Length: 156
Image (cartoon, rainbow, N blue to C red):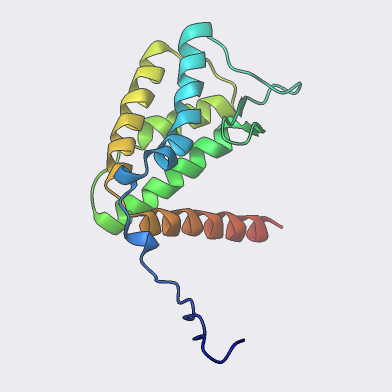
């Protein structure tokens, strides 16, 4: 380097990215709730769900295009908001989503009342999510991932 040039200032990343409210990043909220709303749309419009050859209900994630089982995905969302309910003390409408996941897992019929209640519960959870910080939502996801790992290791 030439003697008359100053060295570049060293890069120091700031730890502030997690303070952003998810209201300012609606695409992240849509990435979580979009596939769940698509499941309800499919149930209401066609009256059926996509299944694997063994009858397991599945859905296609619009974010990555992969197919996933519905019941475990729905229970993952329920687990995350159960942790949120415990942390904040605010009641969340999780029973209808639990019931829907159980019906999907057992391949029981779903009725219009079930999908309407699930849609109302998702709207409440979505409104609650918009008030979260990105770092807090990320910690909820990590907590659920840790819980799932513990359950898998305990079962093995």
